[in-house]
Image (cartoon, rainbow, N blue to C red; front, side, top):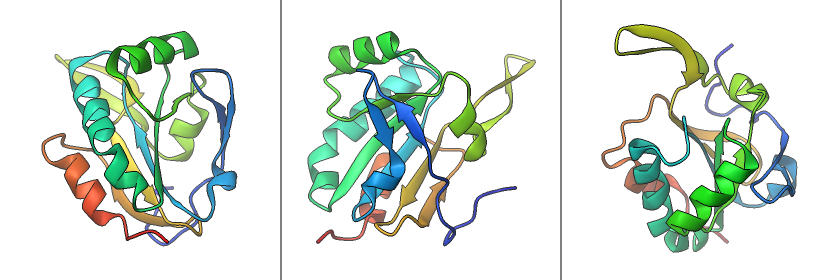
Length: 155
């Protein structure tokens, strides 16, 4: 079942790069930019993460939080965050539980081969926990700016 705008975002708890629990339910009262990406330290994923990093203060000024999710390990996330100076949490979904909840774990084609993987996707969740915008699959060019402009002014 595909997620739809206006429905409640699926709740979850995952560990971040430092082993701390991130609980989506605890984020009520502010917007959440939840982005799923295939892999740490790859060219496209690094570009996307750095663009979110560069927009982090503007996003925060709208009372919003950025959170990245991939299947990579906490150690991989720590290295990626440190190398790219990322100020937001990266969550570990090594069992693809949350990826499946959000419908981003799908069959992909790469160089003629098909395999399951994370389809780069972003979800904007409003302060009440409802899905406000969905971008899937994401085209990197201009994506972060579109996300930032879609976040309503925070309180």
